[in-house]
Image 1: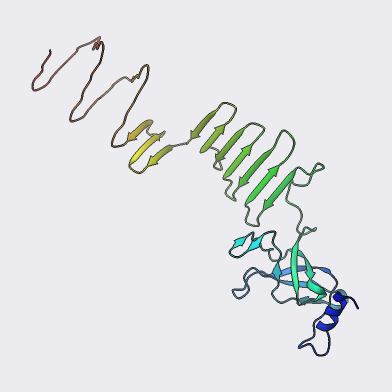
Image 2: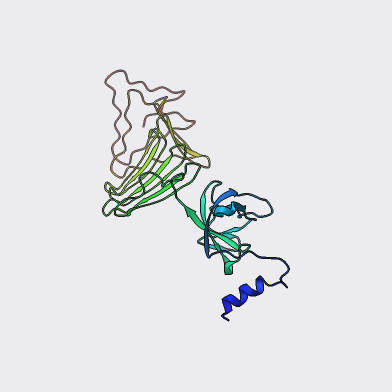
Length: 261
């Protein structure tokens, strides 16, 4: 008698505390329940037994690709999904869900299967998508939410892009042009504690707020506008070389006391 048969015979002998139904190595079933606080991470399935009708399992475990104490992967089959079930030592009461199966009622996600098998995808029932395209020269990874917020990493065009549904709010890192661009339909704000840079497209203004603001041009710093205003408790203009003040109209210098040396 081989070891496998001996174990099965022991499990199903009259001295066993309860009868254990033996099954083939694998069976298909349909998920009926996928939550119980006493059995987290387990599912109940219904086996189709031909002329014998249907049988609903107790709570059974689900196989994951990675598992450990407090870590691992986690994705339970949805209710109504067809699953493949394996039986440890052929024991129906020691069943494990090995994975899910697509069928006519639950077909493959659109635009996944192709002749060269270049698309890999995870798409949840709620509409979250992780898509990897491995077509040579056009490699791309994208993450999409149900609200169509999109992250794209594009090897072909050397771009990383994050954008909203309308594409009006966007962050683009362009490896070809070595540039980073941030686009906002109304406002863009960069902040670090009390320092803030605000680009307000609605008001058509730029606002820079901080305890100290330093503008340093190694060759030249230029401020230009129809009207320029410098205001503070103390204002100092200083040139190590030549300093020139000129107006095509009226030039006015005013103070409680004016000293020219």
